[in-house]
Length: 160
Image (spheres, rainbow, N blue to C red):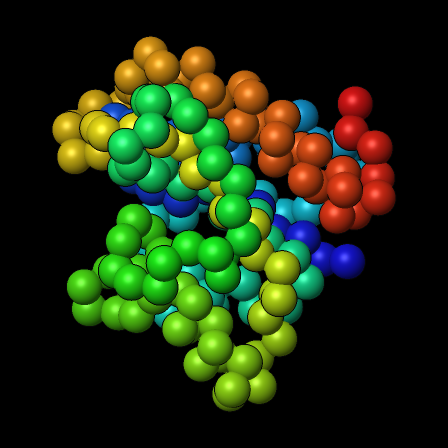
């Protein structure tokens, strides 16, 4: 099974970079022989869909602006998210990731049916900073563990 982990966001916009931080920690903790690709991207919609081509399963990590306590972690299937312009699954000149995947599949692209989204709640995604706020930074190790647990479940391989 080909599995892809993508940390989404912008690492110079404060808490918006949390997806990258979690993905970097996941990459450091993955066994070398585990067949998982890890990437960090600042895109959405069709461009993000193109990165998913050829994978059986994907885990996306992103900041969510929610009315939840900052640093809360949510685990959802992509299809459970609202299909509208929000966060990094789309942008104003594109379409949602859900629509892009549907389009890609209609065109014959091999795209994952299994897309899990791990979101970290925040309210600070538009402030220039390379640092995460303390509650979001504290959530990074737990979010990385959650992603690693998901990967263990999907791949059947143990992670130390």
